[in-house]
Amino acid sequence: MSESGAQTTFRDVPRTGVIYVMTEAARAGYTPGDPAWTNLGQGQPETGPLPDAPPRIEHLPIELDDQEYPPVAGIWELREAVADHYNRIYRRGMGSRYSAENVCISAGGRLALTRAASALGNIHLGHFLPDYTAYAELLDVFHAFTPIPILLEPQRGYDFSLEELQREILGRGLGALLLSNPCNPTGKLIAGEAMRGWVATARNLDCTLLIDEFYSHYIWNDALLDASPGKVSAAHYVEDVEHDPVVLFDGLTKNWRYPGWRVAWTLGPRRIIEAISSAGSFLDGGGGRPLQRAAIQLLQDDVTLQEARAIQRTFRRKRDLMMSRLASLGVTIDRVPDGTFYVWGNVRNLPPSVNTGMQLFRQGLSEKVICVPGEFFDVDPGKRRGGRPSRFRHHVRFSFGPHEDKVMAGLDRLAHLIQNAE
Image 1: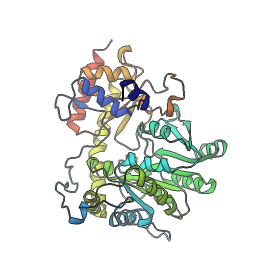
Image 2: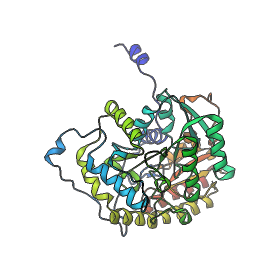
Image 3: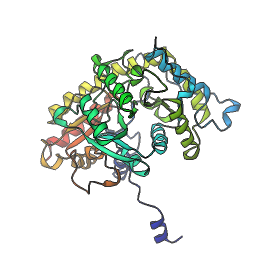
Image 4: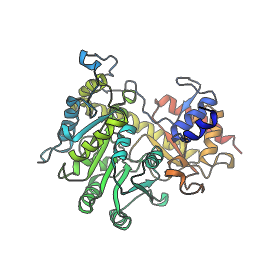
C-alpha cells in the first residue's frame, strides 16, 4: 500500500485530552517516574498504600482454567460478586435485587462505555458540557444515535435542576442521557433526593440514564452521601432493577485504586446487559480471567468500606490544600468540588501569557509540571461547532490524584511560573 493510500484508508483519530497532554509532555522530556516532573494532569489516583487502607495486592495466583478465554460478559463469580456488592450496600430491604445477569464485566471503563454506545439504537443521546474528554470520540464513532449537547453554566456552579432535566428530555426527545457523576472535571455531584428525582424522571419519561460512577468513592460533601461513608450510587434509588432505565458504570480503576488491572463493570436491566455483552463479542472478546478472579476479594464489604474511608481522609486533605493554594495564585474555582480528585479552575485573571488553559499547559511544560486545558472537556463530537473558541478555554483541570508530596511540588512549580509570567 502506498503512503497516499494509507493516508486515505485511515482517518485521523484524535487523542483524548489526557492522552494528548501526556504525548506533548513526553516530547518535552517527561518520562513516568521522573522525580523532576509533576503530573497534575493525571487521571489516576495514587496507587500505593494509604494510612488505614487495606493492604495492596501485589501477587496474583493463576489457576489452570485462567489460561482459557473468559466469557465475554465476565466470569460468573465476579458478576455475582458485583451484584451482591450493590445489593448489600445500596439495596438493603428492597424487594428488587440485582443478580449476576444484571452485570457485564469489561476490560476498563472506556471499553464499558464503548460497548454501551455501540449497542444504542436510533435515538437522541444527551450529554453535558463540560464532561469527560473521552466522550467526544465515543459519541462520534457510532452513528446510530445523534449526540445532543446540553450546556451547563459556570455562573450557576454547573447546577441542572429536575425541571430542566424534564424539559430537555421532552423538548429534545432524548432516549438516553450520558453523564459522569461526580462530574469529571467540575466535581459536581447529583445525589440524595436530587438523584431520586432523576431516576424517577427517567422511569416516567422512558429516558435511559447512562451514569459513569467511576469517582463515586471520592465524595467531599458529607451531606450528599447516600449510604456508607464515602460512597454514592444511583443504584440506591432504582425501584425495579429490570424496568428502571438506569445503567451504571464503575470498576476498580479509581474507587479501589487499581487502574492497571483494567477491570470494570456495567450494571443494569438484563435486556440491556445482554445487548452490551453481545457488543463485546465483536468489539473485544472479554477481559482477562486472572484479574477478574482476583477482583472478587476486593468487593468484600470490609475491604471496600475501609478503602473508601482511607480515600476520604487522604484525598480530602489534598483537595483542601490544592484549592487553597490555587486560590492564592489567582485561580478562580467556579464550584468547590463535591467529588472526584480534580479542581476545575478558571485562569482568566492570571497574567496574559498564562491566562488560557492551553497557554498554562504549554508554559507549564517548561517548569516540568503538567495540567489539562479545559477546552478538552468541551465535548464536541465530530467537531460540529465549526472550530469556534471553546467556552472553557480559560479553564484548567488540576489533579490531586498524585501523592501529596508530588501535588505540593507541582503547585510550587505553578507558583514559580505564574509569579514570573508577563
